[in-house]
Length: 406
Image (cartoon, rainbow, N blue to C red; front, side):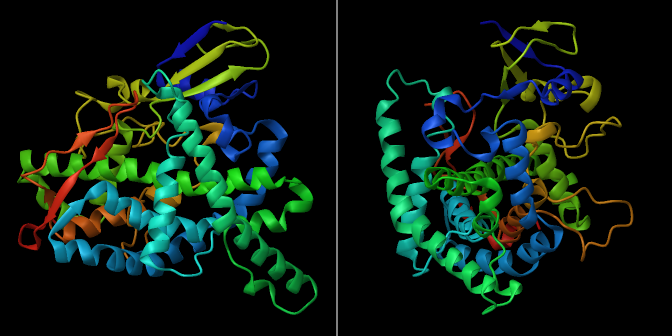
């Protein structure tokens, strides 16, 4: 088997569009991700994505931004504000856990701090799976066993009851006892309604339920922590320019885009060739070969993103063509389905700030900046040294409203 690496922006786009290249980034995580949306290919992927797209609508996203997110932020941040600070990674997990499980369709009958803590512990075990292929440890079997145990607990405690309730609601709707509007607008409900079309097994439903928790919370924490770090460092180095955070209602979102460009959740995409094909540079890929699509390098092209493309610069002029966040949200059939929920849409000239869709990450960043978030001078942030991907494992912060940037 030959490994082909693609680093230029257009070459990456070409590779990500090839129907004969299937997803292989998560092959090492098959025990938890073999049958999830991001791993499916061809018709199976199209069918699943079509069913789940029914809840990825602008009206649903705006409802989250305008009504659900502000309440979740106030409830989650209150104890940290009272304490004067905390760990940004933990704060982010708790915010996104409360948002993500509702969107995924995982019921929390108790809605207590203990129940949230139980889900959070499960999520942290699940987050081991996507990184199995990037692990620097010689023996990953202990991690795999933690994942298996967490999957079994999640299924019994949360997924089975959530599925049963939705199946009962669908039966009530079919019998005319409740209206269509009474059915939940979440991913699990969409899967139950699309079961005749999808024919998913119970283990596949378990994997998909976990996948949405993981994609919605874990990857968002990665983006959130990097964005806060980059903005705080930039504001300290450019105190005059930082005033634009207050002056421009869209600027925080622009800062998040720049951070996402620099720090894609997955630095590379990996694909396995199902048949012989030719890449944009003329390289011939044989069936069975692997293609590594280097998103991080493509996102740092000087030709597209200007001088010093490795530096965080929210004022950066970008050439016509690439998105301001590069290829970090994917491209082609596996482009992130929840992109607009996570980072919003680019503001058009003359956009109304009151009606704009910002995305939950920019809005969380803005809420933290308004509360005066700053690095804890007595406690140094640390990165996860067990995997090759650059991510924060701890990021101690303080809240000082008197020095708020926003």
